[in-house]
Each structure stands twice: as structure tokens, then as C-alpha cells.
Length: 142
Image 1 (cartoon, rainbow, N blue to C red):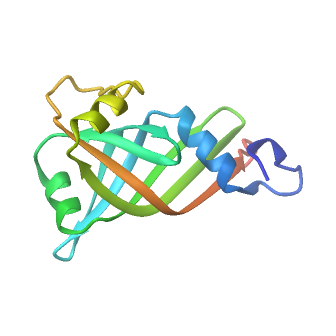
Image 2: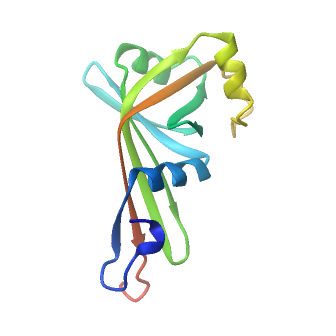
Image 3: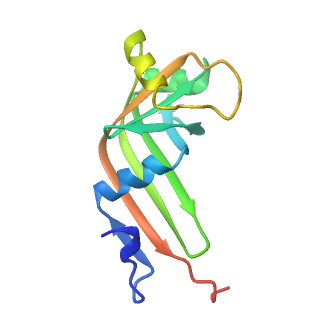
């Protein structure tokens, strides 16, 4: 089922993995959920998708420390338009890319940060599961 398959009878559609990846590829801002030592944190990140992997840059700090301690992560991105919206959640593992060749290849994908601060660490999320939902918005309900 795709976001365009929302029927008049059901306001929610479950998206196939292919459609979920397509929607993720069209967005640039998502949220990564990381956890370590009994704490769970969520951080906004600018990202790109390539070959069903998610890439983002990060500076030194809590996000990098937490995903280094515990590589299991969740990633979420969404969009809300005038008539419909979608949300995609990826469950997977994260790794810091240390290869200059890999980093250069990812930079060519157009990964850009909203905040112009140095972010020397590139992180790759490898998905073990992806789920997506599309919703038709009902403006008649209050």
C-alpha cells in the first residue's frame, strides 16, 4: 500500500518497505533515538538515504557517546501536508564511519547540516526493520 492508496473508508494506510524508503529519501530532517545507561534520548538530525542506509553527521557529544556505547537505535522521519501525512520508523544499528573513502562518498550524496558547526563524525544506520504509516487528515474533527 502507498500513501496514495488512502481510501475514503480508512484514514490510515500501512506502507510497504519500498514506499517507506522512498518517503525517507524525500525528507532531510529526522530524529534519532539512542539509549545508554538507562537513559533514552532523541536528537534531530539532517540525513540522507542511500541504498537503504541512513547517514548523518554529528559533532562530539552525548549523541555520539550513546550510540558508541549502544549501537541499537531508532530513527523517525515524518511529514504533514494539507491533506495527508506520513511517518516512517527505522529500527537498526549505528556505526561511526572511519574510512575517508566512505566519508567522501557520503559527502557526495548532498548531506548538509542546518547548523553551520563542524561535524566531523559520519554515522550510518543499517536497518533491521522499517515501518511506515500514511494518514489522511480530517479537518472536520476538532
